[in-house]
Image: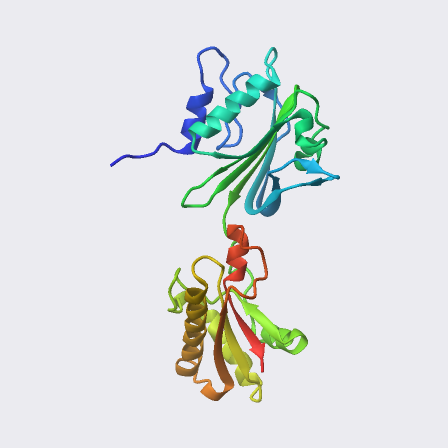
Length: 297
């Protein structure tokens, strides 16, 4: 069986050529420093945040194209080694990323970037003729990785986003919160009801959320609700409509059997991907769209 080397090892191998005697200084685990690099912007890490990766030049003061991603956000910089041009540094990072399996999303030089690209994207000084920018993506099962790098004569700045779902379960839903939202806006999304991909069986981890829904209904005997399933837009529409309806019905079944809620108080419906609350262009957006909503009848 063929095994692939981790992206970090491939990047280090691609950058470690004999012409540079000095070992790279420690940096982000996925992006080793160009050998001989000097101290740059310090590494700053946020466990979960969002970032718009520029994938097109600026136009009229705005990016013409971006990719919105969410996950672990790291920003840092490396000082350019003496005697090395921005082009040399850029080409080495470009080839190293390619060797590690990254696909280039966008690249530009100087004024081709539209002006002010580095400053706007990475908090850096305005572009010069020698400045170069690259956005790249590594697809991997445990979560995609996006890299934006901006090479200037004095420093290379990086943004690395390791896409991952936000940690859930930190704030538990409660019967009181469900009642409040249904009363104020008429509907509430419940993300703690979980299903395996493509399936309609309610997972055991959903037990707490189902209990709180049952408590809410017990506290408001006159309340009746639609249980509405929602999906992302991956797959055929008809399939997603059917899946969302079956998931909603599974929730109703769990409430009526395990929690003894009267069936007349619940109606299962499914709208598939027809009512998104986020863009389906990213993993994070698709995760937000996969949900169960309670709608007051």
